[in-house]
Structure formats: C-alpha cells, structure tokens
Image (cartoon, rainbow, N blue to C red; front, side, top):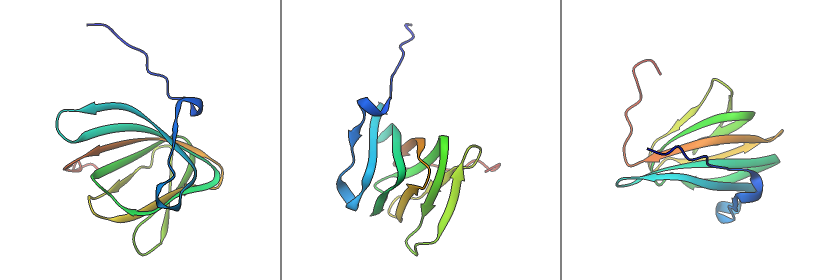
Length: 117
C-alpha cells in the first residue's frame, strides 16, 4: 500500500458555472465503486452555488470558514466547523458563504444517517 497525498487548493479547482453559481469551484478527490464521489468545494466570500436538485444523497462537511445551505423553500441554515448538512437525492438546494468556505462533499446513491446524527 502506498500513501498518496492529494492537493485540493483553489488553483487546482474547476469552476462550477452551472446553476447560476458564482465564485464556486471543486476538485474531485475520489470516486468509488458505483455512484459515489468525494469533492473539495471552495466557495469564495459572498458567492454561492445556485439552486439545483441533488443528483445524489450528499453530506456537506465544512472544514474551513462558514456558510449556509438552503433547501427548496430557500431558508438558510448555518454550516461550519462541527456542523454539516445532509441533502437527500432530488432535494432542491443551494449553498453559499459570506466569508468564504472550504467543504468536503461526499455523494452516494444512498446514505443512511447514523443514529447519533
């Protein structure tokens, strides 16, 4: 087994132009068997990823900074260190930050939240 380092700086990220997004970019970190993916998502201060249906169940874990996630009704909930968001497949949602944030987004066809969540 060989340990590999994976860089995910903003300079390596691909812009996310879809969904009327601005200042958002991502680096695909891994893709698993079947339909599972892990991305590092960068959102610049004052920017967002616009409303769109989740293509997969999604766990959005903020590792730096803070921001918000909104469901289809548009109500924003705060996310940051020690507080993540679970978005079910098909759910209309958006994400953004006033101060900038870096998050790890884990996607799969189906997740079951742990009972402690």
